[in-house]
Image (cartoon, rainbow, N blue to C red; front, side, top):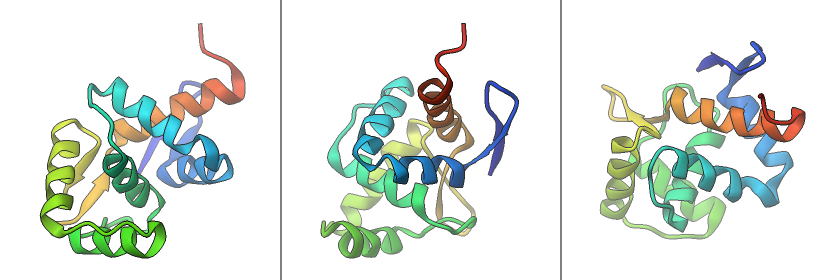
Length: 128
């Protein structure tokens, strides 16, 4: 998933994920800001689901059961599938994730653009 940031550089989901991983203490802050910019309330479960999708190397997305497994394995948080579906439905309505025809979920270009804008502001200062 590619798009251009404000400086005209090509930014991918992976660039944003690597930056957030390098600044692990700030990841929730960046994700929370992105969700607020998109008009969504934040919750720990929404942040964790977005983080799992952002850090997945797959370009085809993850199924809900894969997200549940990743949350259990990586975060130690156990969520049942109906709760994950509810979180995904709300994130999809807010434009953070998109559901594919194969019933997998991906981070949207809009969400990555918001994240890369925040990253750009931190690295280079706000664009005026």
